[in-house]
Amino acid sequence: MSHLTPLESAVMDAMVWQMGDSVPDLATQAASSSPGLRRNTGAGLYSRIVVDADRATRNPDATGLFGTVHVMVGDLPDPIGFQIELRQGRLIALHGQSYGQDTRAIDFSSTPFGEVFTVDARGQSVLYRPARRAPDPVAPRPKPAARPAPQAQTPTRLPVSAAKPADPAPAPAAAPNLTEILASASNPTASRAGKLALVYLGAYALAVLFVLFAQFVLHLGWIFAAIVAAWALRYIHNPKGRVMMSDIADSLDRNGVFQALKPN
Image (cartoon, rainbow, N blue to C red):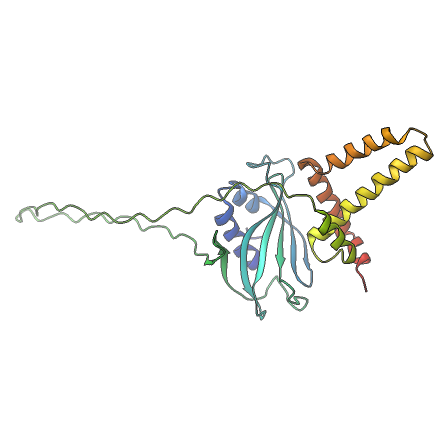
């Protein structure tokens, strides 16, 4: 993963260790990927990761943000939390969230960072230490012929360390609820979930406009228009629809639409 920055590479190694059971081909995807847009968001970082769109994935149901890796970066008093973004099992981005800490002065491509941690099922931070390769066994030295063979002793059985529990299979990201939609209207740049909620709010508004247009302009009858609108709204809440809405939100974010809506 030489195309990744040192920080990205360290985080991705921990992600592979943590998510390897749920996304078996994560390491291969990261190794064969290409770098994309990198951005310091002022409250963390965003790194686009380009993976071949024709590549088959091992877990096509995995869509959303996953992982619990966090790292002490630069002079920040608190760690930055990292998550990978998957879309139908394909790695598309690495997100870093500073939880309100100002990161505008940090150059994430070269900034020093501390040790990498993950969070276990109990919510405890666990230092990430990659497993080291066990040394090769040493061949026993031949015993002198003059000495009698020592009496065989029962070897002491060493305890076997517990294997890392398998991560549960990630579920598709849920559509925003009413609270998130209302919160996004006041500050659409507060979070990625807020941006996605604003896209859903726009979809609902378009559905209402469609019903009015069909009723008063096309004279199709409001019942027919309402059925079509309800079908469309139902579609954007199923897994394929959520992926489509997420794509729209990412596209609008890259084009600065949400920044333009940010309140002064």
